[in-house]
Length: 103
Image (cartoon, rainbow, N blue to C red; front, top):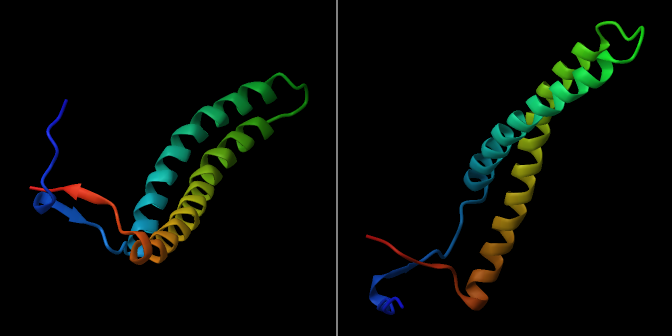
């Protein structure tokens, strides 16, 4: 059982910078979606290689997936966390913010 932390050691997050948070999380999402896109691209390439007369279409589809997935990830992450930051900034004055123990 951990001892309770005195409130003097806790710092409260009273506002989140919307654009900065959205940019950082958007980039993190883009990296994650790139990694996922590699696997999806490989799967699509292998699946389409079994189709007769498909030619280089499978390779193009795989490359397209690997390129498009990070773009979609950035857009989704940016919008999602921008909205969440706006909601957080709206809620904090009403009920208080997240408290963190900092050194």
